[in-house]
Amino acid sequence: MQELGKPWVADAYNKHKMTGQDVLVCTTNGIKYLGVFVNFPDSFDKKWKIAAVVPRAEVTAATRAIIYRAVIIAAVITLVCLILIYVASGLITKPVSMIARNAGMIKGFHLDKVSGVKSYLTEIKLLNDAFIAMKNSLASFKRYVPADLVRQLIASGKEAKLGGEEAHLAIMFTDIVGFAALSESMTAENLMLHLSEYFAHLTPIIQDNYGTIDKYIGDGIMTFWGAPAKVPDAAYRACCTALRCQAKLAALNTKWIADAKPAMPTCIGIHTGDTIVGNVGSSDRLNYSIFGDNVNLASRLEGVNRFYGTKVIISRDVYQEISDRFICRPLDIVAVKGKTQSIKIYELVAEKDALVSKEITKFHTLFEKGFDAYLKKQWDKALDLFNDLQINNPEDKPVRIYVQRCKALRDNPHAVPDDWDGVVSLTEK
Image 1 (cartoon, rainbow, N blue to C red):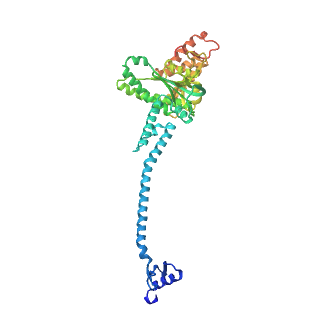
Image 2: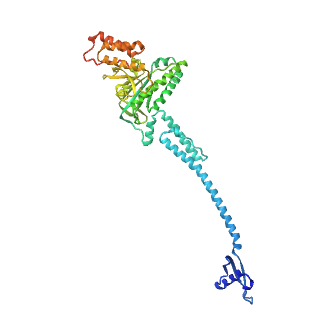
Image 3: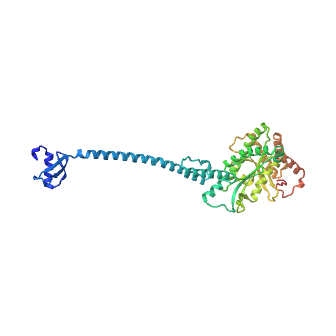
């Protein structure tokens, strides 16, 4: 074999003789060769062999090219499949994640944060439509039931049941002065539109101050603080709400008069105390409300404003909680209609941090001195103070009331019993 001058052929033949393999691989000068040896048929008189030795790369190059192309094609197909899977999963998982988020918002009763989900998948569209319908239904429900109460019911997963509990609440009643006459002067449609505008302005003020609107009673609003969720400084928030409602009404009444619409002057009464709060009604229909003597007293205080010509009256219980932050004028010690026990009442004037003129501050200081003298039966001293106040404040009704009272009591000393305590019994609501 060496005579051929082909060392790789010689190496292949030598390996064939040593191993007896007819198909083999040998290496010559670092190059691998593929060798195949085949014997001549036995009928041939010589034992010759046919050998084929070629570089292995020439044999496997085509196969490698096919394998390489197959790998490239497989990689491309895999990449395309991954992209399609990613896109398809995005079309499913993103809307499903949004729907799950909406479910969380609905559970927390944050309906304003619930948004629609766009999808081309029929099942997801149906699910989204169901959630939007649920949101709209709960939004309507929210207009009838306090939102905090609904949040608690949804969070607890419990069904609302009949029953109540005692809680310390701040209670506020509002009422429009002269509403009966106003309703007679307007058509039913115009009256409803005008009253709706009135409620539309006052309701957000109450809700922004964490008040729970119990109900609209004709032209009045019944509100309380402290249930169903606890409210820090309930009496303070109630007083802030009353003053802000009056400030808003002052602007609205000016506008309404300019637009040839009737003004809606409003009286407000605020009291605080232990109250029964809970669900009342039947097993089929419930009303979340408050009950008790303190509720009735708050309602009476609203009506007492008409006797004194004031806008906001608070009880002594409220005054004790908020006197360090509000300017209040002592009005009287009264036994309201239907009550035998007396209560000291105050006019809520302004927050102490508000810009209040020196004249107003001086007026209330002198009024309080006159009121103290009145309670001490110092009629002449009280009368002098109230007469001085009346000179510059002739329209102030409480001043006029005390001028008349002091004169009557001074001129009729025998009509004043020894145990006189200044209590006035009011016969009107």
